[in-house]
Structure formats: structure tokens, C-alpha cells
Length: 196
Image (cartoon, rainbow, N blue to C red; front, top):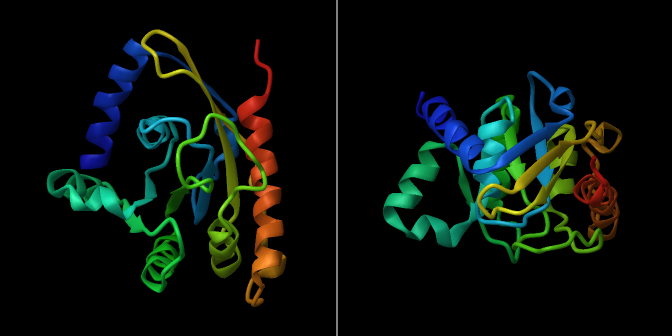
């Protein structure tokens, strides 16, 4: 209820301030567990995706944000949960798998912090770990543009990537890093594609 209310208010606000373009909306599965993996160019990225992707998203957010009491309370109510960007902790893994096993959408910015460009070698292996452990497809998303008022913001949603062939396997870090790179290559393509 709170999520949908916030979506409607913020949709109006975003469409007033920015020229929003959504490409590939049909690529986000209408039901079932999904991991949305996007590049991260602004603190407003989670809001942008939360407003314009059709399904509610439970975002992984840096744990420091939850130390700000009111803000932490609000984002928790909206489905966000904390993550240590330096290492995947067991509590984070459990929460991520809980979200996915309940058939929800989990959002992750695999590069960790905000960066102007996408480097496919800098993705955190957590995204592949969650995909392999849960069997959920990964939907790559590219955000392109500027958050300056009245500028164009494009969200390009790629086709789901399945890693079901690895489900149940205990992959090591090099193997998870390889799968993460495959995901980040797609995110990079979407974030850097030339648009008319």
C-alpha cells in the first residue's frame, strides 16, 4: 500500500522534472522471483527503478543508510534490506534468498558504489551467488542520462538471464566472478547504447 502510494506520487514528480523513457518494459517477468541488476549513477537510481518498473522491488542498500533512523525506517517499510558492500554476510544472503523464494523482485547495484561508467570487471560476485542459490533469473538494466532537471533519463531493461544450470552447485569465487562479468557486460551494453 505504502509502496504503491509512493509510486504514484513520485511518478508524477519524476515525469514533471525529467524526460523519462523506459525501453524493454516487457522483459521484466510479470511474476516469480527476479533479480534486477543495474548500473548506479545517482542516489536516485533506486527511486527511479522503484517508480517505473512494474513490480515492487526489494533493494539491497548499504547498511550505513539504516543508521539514519527515519530514513532507515522508511526504506525498510519499502522492502529494502542492508548489505555490507565489502563482503556478503550470512544474514544478507539469508534475507536475499528469503525475498527471492517468496517470488519477489530483488534489486542490486552490483558495482557497489555510484560510478559514471560501467566496468564489467568491477561487479560484485554477490549477484551471481544469489542467482545460482535461488534459481532466479537476472534482468540487466541500464540507466543512462542525467538527473539534472528537465534532462532525459532512459531506463533500458534487458532480457532475463538464466543461471538455472548452476542451481545447487557450489561455485567458487572465480566461477561466480565469471558469471557476474556476463551480467555486467549486458548492463554495460544497455547503459551505453546509442538512442535516437
